[in-house]
Length: 575
Image: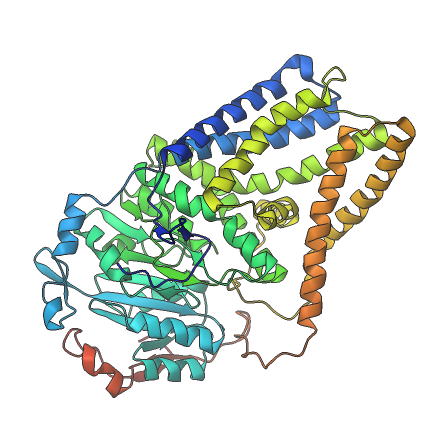
């Protein structure tokens, strides 16, 4: 496969400029992972030692927060150390060799075994910029292998319809956006009839060989879907870089490790499904805005197999603004907490293997690690104002630092090894996102619905509308730092609490500075933005549209794809 992708947070290059493939796990990385695991264990024993306990309140806050972080770290290390598994076995390579037997003659027909395979490629659209949609549609139409490209437009844009026809894609506009993205895909499945179907968000541009690399896995009749990474190319803002690099370990190692346990899950885009598997579970899951992970969980409970490959086969856009990032994380975290509280994978009622239970439990509890910083931010002020310490007074700052470094410093080293450098943007977002995850947990506990928001899109509202809790914490910690420094100056020695609090203040200051920069940029003159789609509570026009591409665009696919009914618009019901 030729490398036509741009540099993303998942692409790395060696000193000679050679791209390092996602499947290359070195012995040094394994060693670093083992040492990091030992550091986690040592820190855990230090915290749990009764002789080290300090005052009840700060010690309890530290114990709860660190327990969440330590458990997640240990389970993540276990998964990462299993990431050497390669799902590309001999049957895969043989199926790939025989996939396009007539390719030298210009025939794109794909064959698995003794049958021809047709793939429906779905591009889900919901008000994205027209140029973004055109870029993705053009790439999807150009995919190698017999396929038909469909634009599923919940934004109901005539401009998108015209672009689809011009570029050679079929177009579907349904009656209403019920079920959000999952409902959109399920509706398209009632019209398209391919044996396999791929799903791309409107901003993810697929590699020409996407089908060539993924379809051979379906030679195994138990494979339900093949997932590829979400790679981002728009790394030009602090938020985009932070959001992208936060996912690097997951896509480069964790998902690969989950392969070994048949627990790799769908992430909603850059994925290809077997239609029969989705039919087996009654369609894409629609009762959650995190339809991707719920669909994967349901498939695994039914005994289907999933495959993840780390190759970057599509590049899209990360959220670039605080608003877009906040809405994305809120939706993802809500989906995780829904699984934890309404469909706990550890329950004996779940038809999962032991390994799958653990992996989905890690997924369901992951966003608790985003709430843990809230507890840790409160610990230094408790000592500064009330002289309440989390650890025994006999514990020196050096002793604490050694054990603390054994956990956190090794996590940073591991992240450095994965990403290739220290990313302060990731540290910042990890520290300041606790209001988002706390809100997500509260929404699930109270049953509050989370509206659908497209990743990467946002309104023109000020970023400060979305970071009020962070602003309040910044002011509080800044004042606390002043008090702490004044206290230490009078005492003649810098305390650990002061250093800890000042560090937290600086991290929040970096985030507030990012918001100020974003706010100023938003006030500059902008070109006109496309109209946003109508909210779900507005009465939609009662019309379903299924439109063919223009005749000139269909000439090349006429022989490879069976015909369907002519372009039509049916009033009052789905086609």
